[in-house]
Image (cartoon, rainbow, N blue to C red; front, side, top):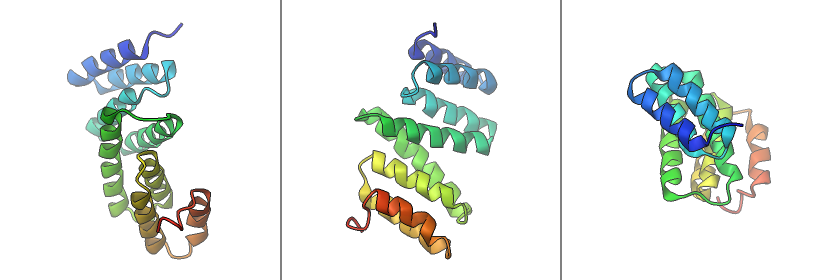
Length: 151
């Protein structure tokens, strides 16, 4: 029987504060395994990967956090703030790597979770502008979320 996500999260936070990022990540993963909607663990795991300078770990954690947030009916303000923070970082990655089309969709999903349709339209428009010839890739997302009317 897995322990509560709060206990796992607290242990991870302790190891994170001590600079033991690998151990903290193990505890954050346990918290997520106990409750995949526990966004605090995703956020702290993102921080641990960022401190390790493990960009792939950061990006996969952000993607998983967005997916977990999308499952929730509503987000408390603290979780909204965490999601906004990771989206800001993700957008910086996109600015540096404009050809990574998947990232635009991930960010747009995050904006939709936050209820920010204009933000989703903006990032998708930017993705289409930076990736000529990949419009069909974005069109499915636009249609699925009826973003034409919002733009």
